[in-house]
Image (cartoon, rainbow, N blue to C red; front, top):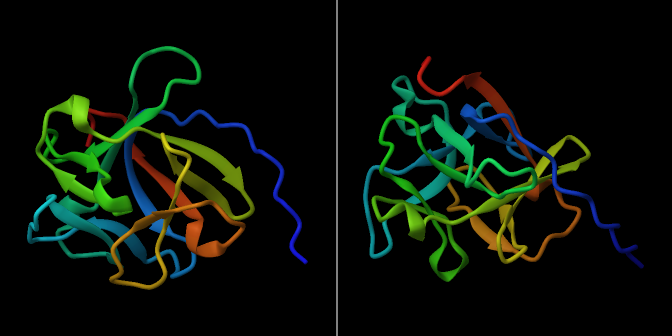
Length: 155
């Protein structure tokens, strides 16, 4: 029988440019905006590091400068392209900033869990899979590593 995982408080994240590694697939797998768009935008997947990783650098910044505020995540090199979550799947789309999804971070063994404002966790089952949002469980497919690249404006 599985024990319930106790509530973990949200952790602050330094605003800046990051690479987001998928823990279960290894450190060479990054959150990546795909090259093609569907109905809701470009699917966001986990993939190997590309030679030109412009679609793999993400800006993480708080929605407002208040402690505990949720965060927005958007492409570092296409600042109008933020993350949206229709149908519990992660997409990147150039929609108004007010429509971007908001996220918080919780510390877990081996990394962080990224949670939506609905309390759903990012999950990637394998390399190339679109990132979905699920009810959080203590599973490595829901564990991520944030690699700080630089402050915003210094990439």
